[in-house]
Amino acid sequence: MSAQREMKEKNHWKTPVTIIITVIGVIVIVALVTVAVLQNKPLLQKYKYGIVLDAGSSHTALYIYKWPAEKDNNTGRAEQMHVCKVKGPGISSYAANPWKAGESLRVCMEEAKQWVPGKRHHETPLYLGATAGMRLLNMENSTASDKVFQAVKEALQSSPFSYQGARILSGQEEGAFGWVTVNYLDDRLKQGLETTGALDLGGASTQISFVSDNFDGSESPSNSVTFRLYGNDYNLYTHSYLCYGKDQALRTVVAQQTQSGPEKILDPCSNPGYNTIKNYSVLYDSPCVSNRKPQKAPASFHHVGKGNFGECQKIVRSIFNFTDCKYSHCSFNGVFQPHLQGAFGAFSAYYFVMSFLNLTDTSMPLETVKEKLTSYCSTPWEQIKQQHRAVKEKYLAEYCFSGTYILTLLTEGYNFTSESYSKIKFIKKIKGSDAGWTLGYMLNLTNMIPAEAPDTPPLPHAGYVSIVTIMAILLFILFILSLRPLWPRCSKLPQVV
Ligand SMILES: Nc1ccn([C@@H]2O[C@H](COP(=O)(O)OP(=O)(O)O)[C@@H](O)[C@H]2O)c(=O)n1
Ligand SMILES: [Ca+2]
Image (cartoon, rainbow, N blue to C red; front, side, top):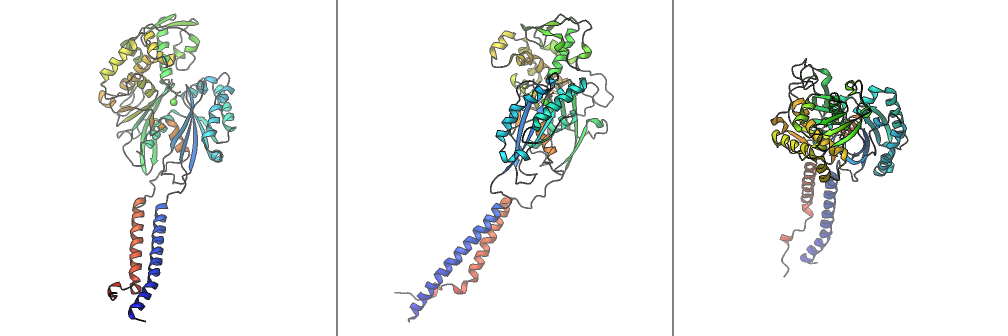
């Protein structure tokens, strides 16, 4: 055999070896990179679910949340998946027939079964939290309140979900969980960023919650809520004003006016031309106004609109007590409040009212806000109705009062100045989830926000993938080099002519 042929045969044998080595090498690289890519990343995203019913004074809403199941508690944010508005009034309105309170929830409970996958039903926690409407009913008639809870509990327990209880939230809880929701959705807690204050306006109570550098809780411990979240300590100032939700405040303002002339009131907070007959017993059916009830009241009164912002604001002011304060600073009614600090998110009725009145832009000077309210209040009732045919008359009739109340509460009650007012954002949702106490409440009860910061990996996921890829390629090159003695020495081959 000639030297040339021998060489060729050797090459024939070596080519498949090289191919096999290359294929194995590629497989190893692909396998290593795949392992790196899949590290911590579930192949199929599975979700967990949680349900919270917000039993407010005016209505009940059922919220369904979902979050990635495979991830650690502290990664993958929980988000709102669906909301179901319960038909009819809030559960406290069923004091006379409690079973109807339970019945009212059934439609939304059925809807929830469609949204949460069947095999997750039994492990999905279900909570109901009641706020100021039930706080008032409980004060007025605790037996009726217990019966409403019994009915609600039975309705919820008959669902396939994992019922975790129905209870009245304290004002502090309501305020604090609203703050947790806003800051959680904004990713401020995990990143240890400066937090946003929370302003919640309900129908029967209103809450203000914020972190202030000069508040340590010592001056008024009842306003202090402490949290340790993701390794950061928060000392939150929070207060809930019972009877200062917009529906109870309106009741108080109307009741205030019936004291001077019980047959007819000429109300500056209602549009001119507004004229209805209202029932006294309905107006006074609340512990917020019962002390204002006239001695000899007729069965009904004429509620006539006058439409005057300035006069309306005077009456609104009169429901606040600005004089008594035993602390260094007070908001109103002798309640301690530290200096306002930072940005605020204002949600629930703050948002509904201000968005209707086109007043959500807080860069607008307070003077302009007043001018716009003056104009809305003085618009004839017939014109208002014609311009907003799709809006419920009950809401329409109240916007002059509600706008005036919000402005007065913020600027004179909480002491927002023209500068700090511009730091308020009127919001409904953050990243698709409603602002409100429900999400914060669920995160707390399911221990989804850890007290300590998660052990952050020294490198982000992409870093691991790059390093493993580079190492795999280097290993492969080394391996190929180690096989050098077997390489066909092409350059030394004699030229075949
Ligand atoms: N579309 C809507 C829905 C609610 N609202 C008001 O938002 C408030 C919600 O209060 P709520 O029922 O949560 O009562 P609280 O128990 O929180 O005091 C009520 O005053 C409703 O009238 C509104 O102004 N527009
Ligand atoms: Ca509420």
